[in-house]
Amino acid sequence: MSDPMIAKAAEEGYLESADGIWRKTLVYGEKTLLTEFRLQKGSRLPAHSHPHEQTGYLVSGEIILFLAGKRHEIKPGDSWSIPGDLEHSAEILADSVAVEVFSPVRDDFLPAKK
Image (tube, rainbow, N blue to C red):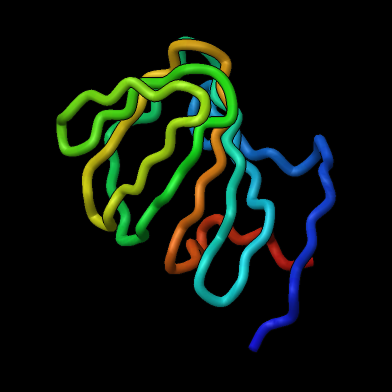
């Protein structure tokens, strides 16, 4: 069993993962990882897939999610679940904030060890 983890709000720690898209890993455990995304209007998340299940919630803004080629308009309060290995992408229609949980833990999203 791993130790509990608490993260306090802070402006530092965001990494640019694509033009206009920043992510910050908030907390993680043995089976899940929670990430906040800040998405700039006009940016695009290129089509990609990964083995991790991805469950998200749009806090603010407006985005279009493309899941296996199907277009979904997402507004604040909307949520989604993307199975592992499903190709997906996004268009950012307004400055947005989303939070997402990944399972299993994404090693590539873990903070660098000090």
